Length: 131
Image: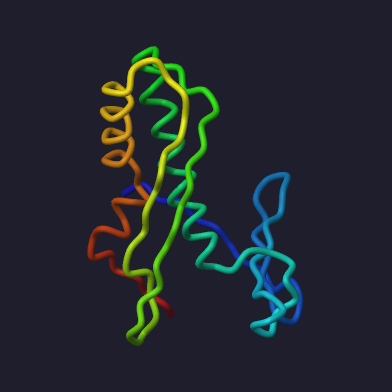
């Protein structure tokens, strides 16, 4: 089975750091929630991962079909549950771009959604182990 691995290291009193090749990413809480506000929260990175994975597949799918996506922007909105434990109960991705073929755009959006490992993961009963 293929895998992807990352390591988080303690950065300061409230945050962690991901070191990857030539860059670092800081995960922190906002000051209003007791953090230092030095990075996005983990949930925001989850949404970033979903959006980044989706966009990567969208761009590749469009390129394979010679569809040019001008001014591409994807807005991601996550809705937090009222019940406990808190979780994202709905995540919306809204694709905005200029292109010459909206029918083909809808097709590549569907292809990108189906090909996105991050979306597939949150849509499945994924086993998560903490030890």
